[in-house]
Length: 272
Length: 276
Image (cartoon, rainbow over all chains, first blue to last red; front, side):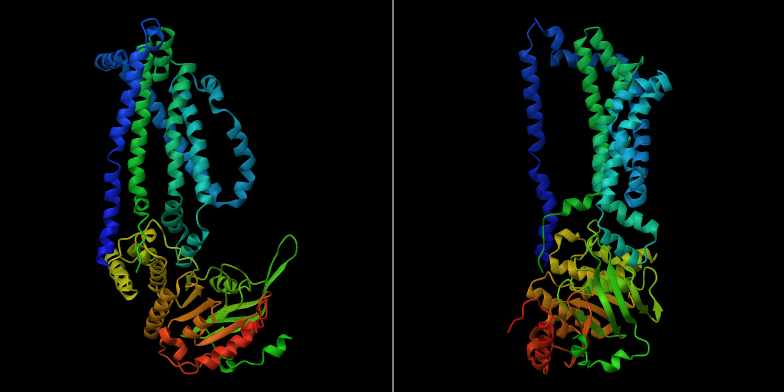
């Protein structure tokens, strides 16, 4: 019995050990791609494609000179505020409609209708409504985030094993306890899928909003670089954006691991 | 035709028990369906006496599970009454414990957290509920597995956790819906043994559903036989076997053979294909 237990406990560790080759491999692929880029760009088209070394130089320059910080802060603020609002709305509505068959029936056509609108197409409208400042970009981010979080929360709730809910109720759980201790953990996996897929869309929303009308933010910076044929700056801006998405996803992954740690325990079935 | 079958009621004294824990009184249940309404239960009348194991056997699809849902207040009868401690069940009955066909453990909680769950709902302090949960894990032979998650446990182990999680909060009646149906024969025998061990100490009132005659005889004091759809009661029996019973050699217990023959003779008339 004790040997079985040890086996099961060592499993996650061995899986982590098995993953150790993954990061070097990924770094290797990145290096190959960068080298290919570096070597394939000739002097003739350098102006359009730039080179990784030039982009790196530009990045260094931007961060040391401090020019980029203003744009990062603006875009980051738009993304964080918009994401928080959109996620909160999506979670709330997803929960209500996911638990209420009646409300879900009533609102389904409206939701589908709204979903079919290309959110990005609304960005110019938001600029008319909310002006050239951060508010209009936040509105785009809210919309982009909301739908992804809402749909995943909603479907996560529909997929909760109703027997678990009924068992908890029979065990005298109040509705608040049922939500916190059963429905939320049971749907957390799907909710996190929504929260994580929404991150790049939130950043894209902010960037598009900035493309359409603004004088600061990473979107503005990238657009301005492209209009001034400054390819290294354009790619540098994109690198910063990618880094931003990775950072946000990393934060979410850490939270997810804490909340959904039990999932890693799968696989080792014990016999008695 | 049914009347012809019914007179073989040996549980006459039980049927007139003045205050059974659960009483089904002429219960009828109709499921409304698009094509035609389906009568799931019709004229179901029987008692679940206090402190005994009552088993309902019947062919699959005869509405056995529905009986448990009625007691739990998860389904309402179309006609007739389901009485719990003399009162009609009108809402969710939180005095019952329900052990479902699937173990239905909370996959995000460890074994011990699953067993503690009902106590946590009642606001019992962490040290106390941990202590009680560990006692129950020992009782069902799962000491040492308290920090494993359900998906790391075998089917039989999950079932043990599910039983401990229900019995720990001492429900007045335990509803068990074919809980051992999916287990292999050896594991099932072990669990019969453990269940009867626990029962012999606590004398829980259990309403057990199965389609397995041997399981019914092994565990019960009182057996209710149901017909195929619509589910009606065709007979009730008192199990003549003495307790404690040796579940591993239940065939050797006195009276097993003749009682099994009697039950089987009755039960086979409900099967779609008539065996010899």
